[in-house]
Length: 90
Image (cartoon, rainbow, N blue to C red; front, side, top):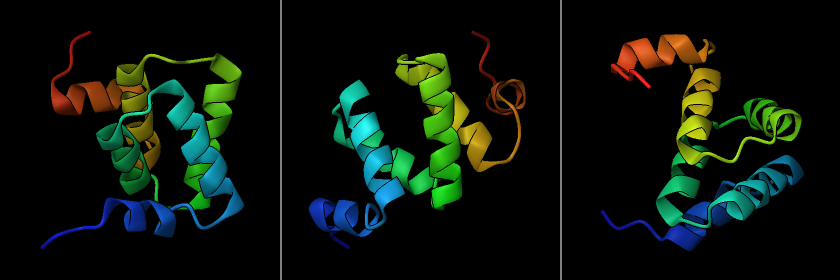
């Protein structure tokens, strides 16, 4: 099955919060797989807003750390739990 990336992005940035989230991430790292994975993980505007608030409050730009926080928000847990779950030791 082939997925049209532009159509996926358009569909998943249809709300003002989702558009702002996407643009904020794109400024950090304009890399297709990173952007798509974030949109896939944080499906609701509420979770996207929570991630945007975290990015604005912390100034976080390290994409590995952003991904960990994204997964924590997705799973309603904390980063330490995500690190333990996936065997991340840094």
